[in-house]
Image (cartoon, rainbow, N blue to C red; front, side, top):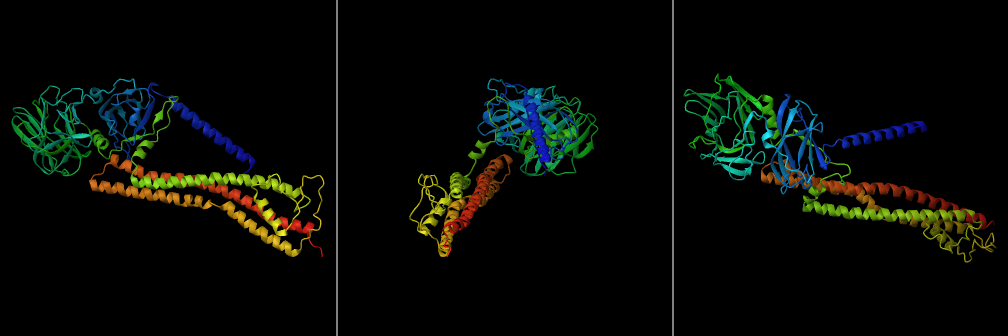
Length: 604
């Protein structure tokens, strides 16, 4: 590469760095409110690799799941009161509702109302701001769900009755099922099949004249004999959504006559959590949905206008037709929700939801913080076997650092004194008359070889080169060819000894380079094995439970690389310096006998 091309490349590199810095500066300067120190970008992917919904959804409630793997709970207030959500333009505040915020278990469930969630797009995003200890609570549960929702029940209570999170506040008046057990979204309701139900008192707000949708997450314990999930019955009119066996039925009562409409195309699974929805439009068209897919459509021809009476979930008012299983996130809408909406709810709320992506935490410039890498979360989850491996790697890293520093200092001193000695040797008229009276050659490997060579010549007399009266030769000294050969042998032995000295302890670095990553990999494989063994023992897969264990296992590989990479760089640097020093020693070993022979050689 020519000098001109090198110059162009360097200028392009500088330009690229400046552009990157400028973009970063401009993005960092766009900050919704400087009273909040931290923010996190949450991307919303509705494409094929995300929620996989092509329809645009207006005022859609998005579930944000926060845990120790994607959020530092120490940055926010104890109850999450300082959390705010802002649209992608970083100016518009969004309404949200905190269902749960547990700083001890480091778990939060927050619903955010996204005004326009574009379908089949990976460009959607919202910003979550936090880190303002003076901020008042900003959640708005009544404004988080659109007006079509007439009842939203999270079952997040530990006791009492389930509360309505919709704008209508249609709280239950009676509840006989269980609370506080794990659901698909936080806690759920447990219905034993022995007459448990949730009663919602009759209210004009429950108006189904413009359509109706009932949706819930369910987990059945067994096939149901005849379980009424939802019922609203007056004297001569009524609506029942039931499970008979493993089929969903809609029973519409008009003028005392009941008609049954069944989803004949699919059976409900009798294990695990699944999303069920039934939508009825004003003309009586009934659509069944299971796990976000439309399973069948039937025409009833009967609308639901004028329907009155209490609403019961789980059984009828007498405790008959009971459901045996768990329910979570029961929602009642006064509109027929379209396929995209139902699919979006199923895909964004379930355990395998992949709508949201959480970026690295950003810190307001000048707030004095540092980027967060969740090191505390990783360290506190490292198991004993991981700590043993990491301890061995730390010991290896300390030994490598000691070798690199001591060897670098040794080579620096050796190179400096070698250079000084060679300057004296090359300018001296007498090759055997150098002495180290001032100690200026201490630490020189060449001088140590030189001293060994002088001893082999049995020279008793030395001359101080700094003396003004210096003789060019030592009187009476003659060196035979045999003595020169002996001198060469002594010098070569000295070269070998110096080479050993130069390469001593370098094996520590090669062990760190080769063994560090393998030790780290051993810890990772062992940790992953333990994590999946524990998951198999528990009989349930939960990403929030698996993630800390896997992160802990991978930390051993990180430590292995942290040990190996500096050792590799240090080894490469030291080998280059050792090679240069060895070359200087070799040149002197060849040069010294020739100069001695030229000055004191036996010409006879």
